[in-house]
Each structure stands twice: as C-alpha cells, then as structure tokens.
Length: 446
Image (cartoon, rainbow, N blue to C red; front, side, top):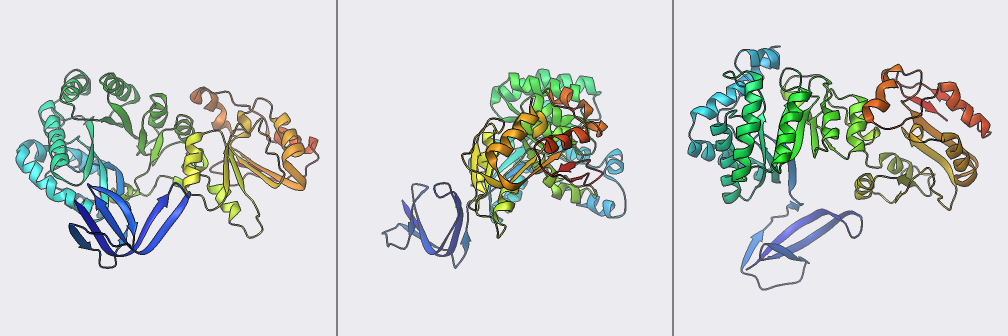
C-alpha cells in the first residue's frame, strides 16, 4: 500500500549524510509498507492521500523519562504548592507518590488501561512518537505487574512506542519496612517481571529518605542479573552520590540531577552515562534550584559548544575540536555548523597545522607531564603571537577538589596556582589568571 502526504510546507530533519540540519520546502512524502521511500514532487500512483495543509513535518520527538500509567491525577497538589506547602509536606500527609499508589491499587487493569490510552494520545497529538514509560505506582508485586501489563497492551494497540521500565523502587509503601520491601523487589518482583518479559529497564529513586546508595546498588545489580538495563533517579533534591553510582554501574542514564556535584558530573562523563535533566519537574514541584545543564556540558557530558562558538566568530577562519571520547564527537558533529572534529589523544596529537588560539577546559591535569604537553602545544600547535587558554577546577587551593581522584578512580595531577602559571612562563608566554565565579572555583589561566 502506498500513501502520499501532500501540501507539506517544509520537512525539517538532520541529515547524517550531509552532517547538517536539512530543510526541504514545498514537497511530498510517499510511504510504502510503513516506510518512507520517496521525498519530492514527482507524481506517483498511490492508494491513499493525506493533505498536510501546509504543515511542518519533523521526525517524532522522544521523551526519555515519563510516568504515564496512573489513575487519578494530583492536580490539587500543584495548588497546595502555590500556597507554599512543600512536596515533602504533601507526601507526609499521604499525597505525592503514595496518593497515586492508592488509586492504582483500587482500580481494575481494564479501567487503568482505558484511562491510560486516553492520556497517551496527548503525546501523539503534540508530536512525541516514542516514550520511556515507568511503572512505580503499584509498589507490590500484583500491582507492579498490572502497570507493566498495561504498558505492554498499550504498545500493542497504540501508534506510540512505549519502552517499559520497572520502577518498584519509587518509594517504600506504608505496609512495609524498607529492608523487607527491598527483599520483595529483589526476590519476587524482578524475577516475575523478567519471566514475563515486561520491562527493558529498571529504575530506582536513589535519594536520601527513599533508597540509599547501598539499597539502590542491591536492586540494580539484581535487575542486571535478570537481564535488565539500568537507570537512576539521581541527586534530585540532595547530592547523595547517586550520579557516582550510576557511573560505577554503567547505567544508561542518570535523571533529574538538580543537586548533582561536579564530581558526579565528571563520573557520568567518564563512563558515558546520559545526563537527563527535567526542568518541568523542578517547576511543577515548586523548587528554585534547576539542574545546571550548562555545567553538565562544560564538565564533560559535552557536545562541542566551545568549538562552535569560536567558529561563529567573524575573525575565525577555521575551528578544530579534538577529543578522545567518540560519544562526545558524535554529539558535536550532530550539531556542527561547519567546524571540524577529530578523535585523538590530545597529549600526543600532531595537528599538522598551527593555530592562533588553543583553548582547553578541565583537561590538562589528567596528563602525567603537562609541562611537556605545553611545550608541544607551543612548538607544534601555536602560531607566533598566539594564545593558550586553559581552565582548571582541580588545583591545590580548591580544597573541595582534593578527593576527586579517589572518587573518580583516576590519576589527576595536583598543582598550586603558581605552578600552573610557571608552565606558561617557562614557555615564554605571557599570562593572566582569573578565579572566575568563586562559587564554581574555576581557575582560568591564559
């Protein structure tokens, strides 16, 4: 069967072949056997025609963190938060997650399915075609299985693709103490869910007052044992070390991260764990401290933003980014506006050309011999009269950074401010340095 979508104002999509955003105006799409096989203005004999009425067409959005299967909503809680009542206070009064649990347990699977089917249609109406869908409002074996069964049935009848995640460790239900409940998750829920193949992922709310680092590790290791991939609600309200745990266990993602530390971000970057931030949740909960997306990018979960920024300067003729992490380069190239990216070990890389500016952030202290690297950069990379700028957050005067090598389990060179400056002096480079934002304790030397 062939279907033509006509009267498309524009198609906007990323072109991997051309490595750039591509826009095609005033065109048609022809679909055969559920696959696009032609985009253009040629006429085809088709079985069905859809009029786009001048609409914009893009690939479907993907929502990588949702809790879509519940019965009664909690809209009244938003009103309470506008009155200054905190999320913790609402939870202690029987609201929050516990309120959703009560309504899910009381309703039949059929009613839960029907209401959830109506709800997920809003994703499709707003352009989302794939979601990760969590359980977590049942919190006993029977009702967690019910939630995941609903997700499976929705997948069978809806155009929306749902990726199922088991989240029995969303909270501790009132009828259990924590240790008993964790044993129930590990010894009964996970095996039952795995046997029925109802979940691709396992998620845990790793947070002080919910599930500790030790609790979360026990649950997630059991889930991995049964073939599930893992993810975490991490460091949402406090820096509990959950991001470090996500890195240690090679989780797919660590989500929320409103209170994550610099060391936690670095841990995620080192192990290629996806950092998922959810500003809508922060707003809904009435919190003031949002996850710092810019810092997450700066500290290693990067996408080449600095190289792009330099490339866009009017005086820049050529900008090149060098990084050893293939994932970072994939991210950078997907956003490229004409700059170039090379995967290489910068400590020994020979670019074969010279530049007027060399810029590096949070890199040089990982080198065993930074002085030799500086000499190589000056002698082989830098044009006469050029400038080196490098940023540090690991140095002697920043006492908070002293524990990082142990936490990251990687060697890092600790030097004083004056020692870093001396490297510039010995290479006959002028220098200035600025401690920048005192809260971040970054040291910028150039």
